[in-house]
Length: 267
Image 1 (cartoon, helix red, strand yellow):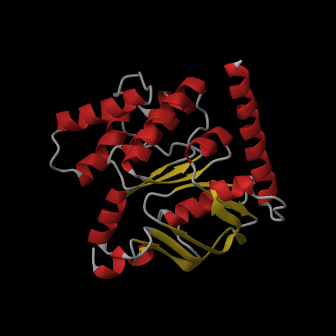
Image 2 (cartoon, helix red, strand yellow; image 1 turned 180 degrees about the horizontal axis):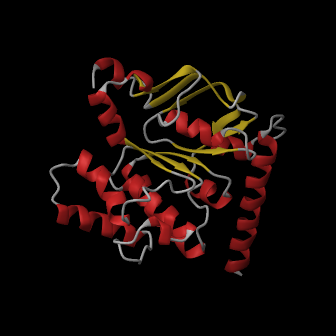
Image 3 (cartoon, one colour; image 1 turned 60 degrees about the vertical axis):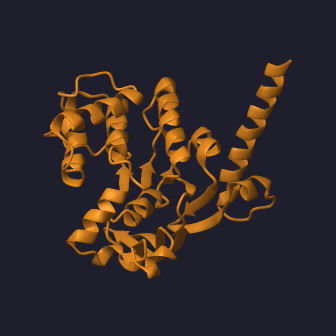
């Protein structure tokens, strides 16, 4: 890392626009993410949240604008820098996006073989097994994704995103398809990421996840960032006039409900 990149945000989007099938999905989106931030991206369905996450992660190209990781334009990374980016930033997909022709073990092992070539196969298997166990995956690591439930696929996808111990984690709907016990295990794993200072950017409308982990709220509507503020500021704000109003109102309702539940428990 040179002097220029040390002072740069970990991730920066500048004037990002993206379209699909002739329809514009994102329009002139700019966002700066510092190291250690924990950001919840919320908003209506179809507003462009997942596309925003994938462009930021270099998984989908932008029609215009630039995405920078550590001061380097993701679209122009050479092979060496691309490998460095993929080692330091990872993605947990909404639908799992597992390699269907590979076992669960190989879904986690392939990134390790590429980015941690010093690890033995037994070390790779143990690391994969331990992480999956923490997330509550109890099936054989030799099964293929087709045999898994949607919740199990989500768990394996999240484990694959975390197996390299990345610096930056993108999570698209991390609690989707998870039952209450699985969510609790996920929260425990994310707690550990928080303690390590991992940068987390999560697309989610799960208020429990947001209130537990997010320090910053970004609201996307109609392909634009309509609100961006620290969570504490958002929760104290009154009279928000953008599409964020309903999002913040919902977060406040759940916060008040939890406060009343705590009072009731103390009686």
